[in-house]
Amino acid sequence: MPEPVLVIACGALAREIRALLSISGFRHLHLACLPASLHNRPERIPGAVRERIRAARAHYRRIFVAYGDCGTGGALDRVLEVEEVERIEGPHCYAFYSGLAAFEAGAAAEPASFYLTDFLVRQFDTLVWRGLGLDRHPELRPLYFGNYRKLVHLAQTDDAVLRAEGRRAAQRLDLAYEYRFTGYGGLADFLARAAGSGDDGAADSPVLAGHSGPGDRSPGTSDGET
Image (tube, rainbow, N blue to C red; front, side, top):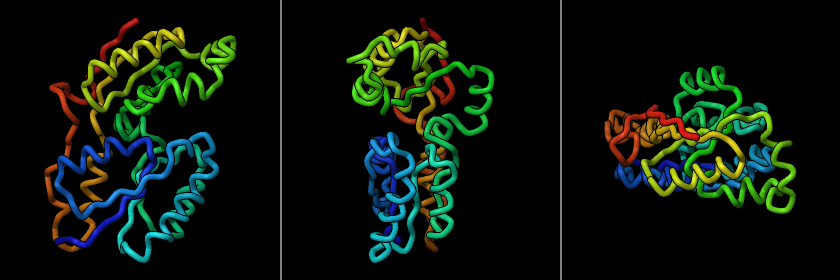
């Protein structure tokens, strides 16, 4: 049995990571999540990650972090350099789900896009609508979203219910809706690398490589709607 490996992750990735771990059978890969609400105070993310890493040292020799920079302005990377811990590549989950180059190209071509993942579609009321106070002050909507033209749903799963919820979210923000299936993107590759970080050759396992999630769509499939 390979030695246990810990992945410290943003709570916004918990569902997707658990799904990938179930698919992979990597029983030695363990998951510890920090609250997704830390994104409301990104300056707290580096300290919270450092605390969790140091608490885990007594039980894990190998630790990985599933966070992008997530608005920390490089502070998270400075913590991880000191702690000698690797994180997933990319500034945020939109990029590593889409693929870094593809996301950068799309964002440059369509800068007036607001992005939601499956997690954010599920949590739209809590994190966006009520989180920004739009339930109490709907007049703030143009202030927050007046410069956006469309909502892009970067979907990890081909789920008709989530697609409908994403469309409703776009309508509430008065934005056009675009559905773009990404699958799990770079998250799957990152977990495969973490699982194979020991000396047993597990890094060559193809189980997660290129895994895009349920459904018959290919990553990058995009449907524009209004």
